[in-house]
Image (cartoon, rainbow, N blue to C red; front, side, top):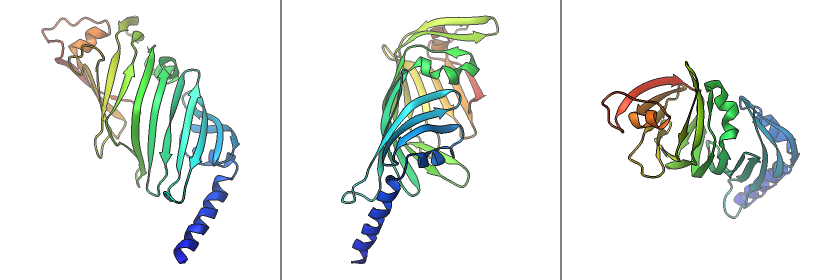
Length: 247
């Protein structure tokens, strides 16, 4: 009897919250640094708005809450993010201590321009994200992200442009595949290689929680971006290792 009463009260509480105006979500979203939700319409249960992420990224966001007491007391938010340059979709399974975020879809290189401008890099083509599951949890120190399973990101290829000390450089790069390896307790490592006729990873990115990324570069990758390596190293030999502050 008490259990049924508790479930009934909980169901009413959830219904009241989810039927509240969508504008309430803006309060929650703005708690995330560099993120804002503008022009929210509908309700917390089912609505839409424009999501803005610094630096200069914006897209239409729509969401719908799926919650059935017979299946689970945990609501799941199904979402879609889109504009002329991207189409991403997925879900968020809300929990007390952590949230599971699923994502898949595609986006163009142009959608990355605001983020890549600071590095003087321009990447064309399209990117395809395979179904990916991320676990987001809160600790005393900060928000933690964990890739639940390995994932892949496919890039169609194209002519990349970048700036070096001697001016603007450009090179045609064939299709690449980024294999993202999950690692419990740390950020995932990214291995980048050719999509076709791959001989192994040509570039390896290992991010650290402090915002630095360890970058391992092979001779093959240097030649892939239009540079010449005069040493005796073989195609897959590592010729450069650097650490850069990225976030």
